Structure formats: structure tokens, C-alpha cells
Image (cartoon, rainbow, N blue to C red; front, top):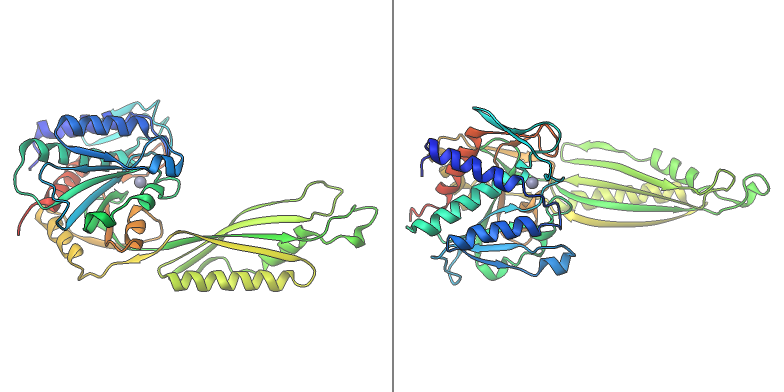
Length: 374
Ligand SMILES: [Zn+2]
């Protein structure tokens, strides 16, 4: 479907309608209701999963099926997330000849309402007009911004899903994330011994001093071409006249392979322990936020993607990226998934904007991905 002036106006209208619905992470009821209403009135079957109760949110993931969908056949899934990083309740959109932005006092919500509006339009048009398309469905996830939660709970295993195209990268259309880091966090608690700082200082062991020495011994920042490490939070101490018993730090490691992340976390733990022993104790725990992925340039879903990009006049531009998306969760489930540039630029800031040509191109790319060319 080639964009003309009236369809472009409709795309902008739909985007603005969705962007102005206030629904932040795990509070997606309003946007989920509107998306469900739009889909159902077009004949799209919508199934909301049980993620609301699992995650403590107000809505679940929406699995949205065109009339021709065959659950017994291999399928592809196109996805976006329902939540925005901050409220869009007070959004006043500004549309000029080339772009859409907010008035500068709120985010625009292009992340991810731009991807969402493209997929809503795609699937409602498919349902209305029918035709020959690949076996596909649309998945709208919850809780992406605060931890990729909906993508984590979404059941794709029961769908014979071949691959997932995620419409959620802030780069411009044509760019896509073929390699993404994984991210693990760590918490380290330094335990000393409290005592009155004036009356009996020799009886105490300062956890602040333990932590300071230990952190100073760490290598942080860019560790190598693949890996970064950071200590981002520190909390501790109770009173100026008490030797502090506990200090807790939190940090993260990012890298392109799981083994490299594990290796770096091991190095951090050993370094902290050797600084603390034998004066104090260390409690060290780690947690996987998301795993890395690296897709082969020869993977069928990548070949297909690049062909679709060229068909709509985009030059494919694969990149490595140091942030996560729902694509990381799908890859960890064994479903090849790639995050696509949709041009929702400067995300999470009040300067966020979208070029109208990128909205149109993203829509054309979505159409090309579901075209049945078998
Ligand atoms: Zn996003």
C-alpha cells in the first residue's frame, strides 16, 4: 500500500489519537482498551493474556489476529509496546509540514505509540480488505519501559512463531539492531560493625570505608570493545556519630555475549571480596535483566527484512546497540527477533519528535514484511 496524502493524514491522526492516551508502564488499561476497540471494530480477534495479574498491572499483552490467521501454521509476529516512559496526559502535539513533536512540556510518546499506530493501521486494513498475506499476527506488550516485562511473560511458544519484528528502535527506518548487548545487574552489600564513633571507635568496622576501598579497586566504564560496567547507586550509614554497619551498592554489566557478562560479574565479585576480607563481609547477588542477541546476516528473517527494506526504498543498515528491547526477550525464548528503526527520535525526552516521512516509511515496511510473495 503506497501512501498518498489522505492516507498520510489518517496515519498522523491515528498516531495522535493513540499518543494522547495516558498509559504508563503497568497502567496500560486505557490504551489497551482503545487498541482492542479499534481492532475488534475492524474484525480483528484480540486475546488479552494474563500478564496483568502476573505483573501487577492493569492490562495484559494483546495478541491480535487477522481473520486469515492460521494457528496451526508457522507465523511471524510484528510487535510494539503499549506503555510510554512518562505520562502523555498533557501532551499538546505540534504538527508541521515535516514533523510531529510535543509543545516541549511533555514527551511525544512516539516511543512506542508510533510503532503501535503503524501496526494498528496495518492490521485493521488487512482485516477490512482481506487479500493474500503471510501468516502473521500483532503483539502489543505491557511494561516494556520498566523491564521488558510483558515480552517476558508473552507466550509465543504456542504460536509456532518463526520470528519477530519489533517496531521500537528510535533510529530512522532502514536501521535495525542485529546485535544487542545483554544487561545483568548486581547488588553488593558491605557489612561492617557499628559502634559509637567517639566512645568506642576501635570496636567498629566502617562499612563506608569498606565500600569506598572496594569500589575504588574496581575497573568501571568501558571495559573492552564489547563490555561496560557501572556502579550507579550507593546507600548507607545512619548517623554522623555512628560507625556505619551497612552500605549497599547497585551496578550493572553490559556485553554482547552471556559468557562475557558472567566473566565480568565474577571479576567484580572477586575484587570486592578481596578488598573487604577479612575486616568485613560481603553479600553479592546478580540478576539478568535481559540477555544479549547476535543475529546472523544470513538468517532467513534478516534476508527477508533487508529485501523488504530495499523494496520500499530503504538502504538496510544493521547496527550493534547497547540498550535492550522486547527483541532481547524473544531471542532469549529462542525466537529470532530484531528491533527496527521507526524514527521516534530523542525518545524519553521532551524534545522527542517524528518525521512524517519516517512514519510513512515504517508503515510501508510493515506492509512489505507481511506481503505474501511465496
Ligand atoms: Zn520503546
